[in-house]
Image (cartoon, rainbow, N blue to C red; front, top):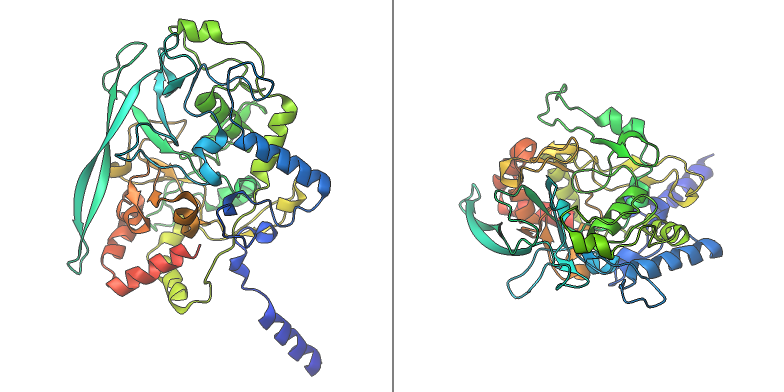
Length: 439
């Protein structure tokens, strides 16, 4: 018995640190430029790999409206001609820089309007016949702040200017600027059991911890019932299928099974005349695309045994960040996705809506999400964003220039955590950031 115990002890000491495997068995250890687009590490069946690869081709394809044989149906109005165009290297988008002439990986949702619908399209397949809906510019306002130890910092806040409205001028437009999110790990998030999410919900803060997270219940167009919203900055989409179909329609003008009519309003005459009813992405291609997005693996954590990283993790918990950025979940069984099933994952999110304060509010209510409420974004892969996407801009509108600025924009339910961070000694702040960069 003693020999068996010693053997098991030695074996356990050789096992990898569990939380390195952010996506359970889907986790891969490729940290190259393609890290956010790798297949799940446990996806090995040749037929499934072929389906994944077909979906990858569709994700990266350039769509057009020139009657060539492949990938037809772009527009008439759109923001990007490729999924990859917004989700570059499957990573997150960013706001427009001073030297850039257009927004490459952002969308602008608006309060539903009879002339412009629910989102603005900034491009067109024929600008003379079908003008883009609007032109948008952004300027940055500096906001000064100070840590409690006296060190100062500067944040930047976006200010948008809307001009050249093509279908009627709009004053006091209620809008929400959104950067494209990362797409890896979404299949795993879709399989977090409903009952587990509901068990964490506390909309009235009954436990009096200052956190009143609530789930967003949204309409599933396929099942025709309300379901938990999991995807999007406001958790406004219940499934990956609906998330993808909505993005195809509003960002690329591609119709599908869920949306067979273009997003042209009644006043957009030429837009309506140029469209054809029906699916511009067929069922098989959509299935391959959805499969691809579902089975993208999650990159592993790095430096998990580093002493400062471990201390930073304790600080993360002590500040209360862990109440919203819940580290650990276990996925349920899905016979269509056994690779994603029964996985212990570490996304650091609760998928819930939280009041993030007036500084981050935009006034746009989306389903049950108010203007100041945002879904807790997953943090896995956070430390690789800058390497892969060549920028460090964070938050829903890309205003934060790095992790520290993202923390300093927190308000509402997260205000006490933000203030506690401001009060930390500089070395402790450094350790917390080092932990977050390990994710």
